[in-house]
Length: 231
Ligand SMILES: [Zn+2]
Image (cartoon, rainbow, N blue to C red; front, side, top):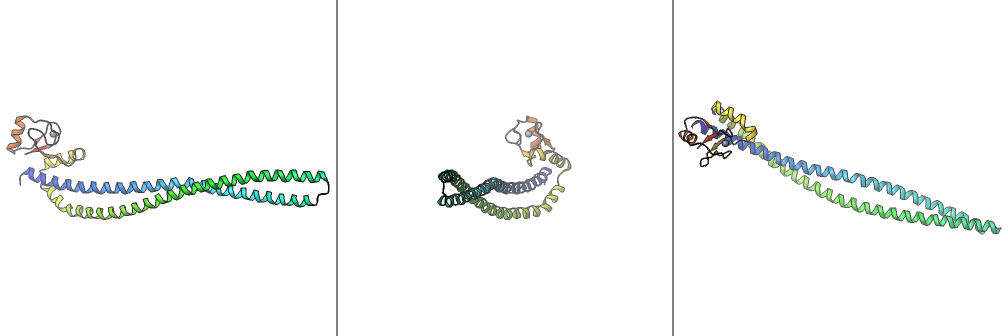
């Protein structure tokens, strides 16, 4: 094997390994998006629940007020039946009328509150259904990703030794170039020329550069992107 072949072999293994890692990353990212979605839905649920509790408490209070008025009205009616004077009688009647008006208003309020509560309950039921669906999807995805990632992990750990072996055979100057360029340019550091152009950045190469590559006697770099050029 020539020095470029050793380099190419290492680069192939390295990029395969990188690919597996990025696939794992992608899957983990997707799982976390699903998780965030569930958290957001739970956060959306809380204020509705609070409003419903407030509505129920207010409804109970108004119902208590209605019951109070009922007993006051009943008491006045009792007094009415035993009233002996006309002024006492008309006073009691006016009082009963006032209580009854207040009762009508309160009952309207209670109805309005209960219809609001019903509306909130419907919204919550809808949200809960979406939440249950999202949880189901999340669990499914999580199980699938765990399985797939464990396959990738196996592949990655099986490649550890071959990668180290391949790396140990790479010319030190080429290795230095690879380690320097790989983080920014990716694993495609050794590229074949494509026609008269660099296979990495596609800049056209001078004829003497092409000639040097064909001779395969020296390391040739692209003047523009710095990649190693091969046939
Ligand atoms: Zn280039």
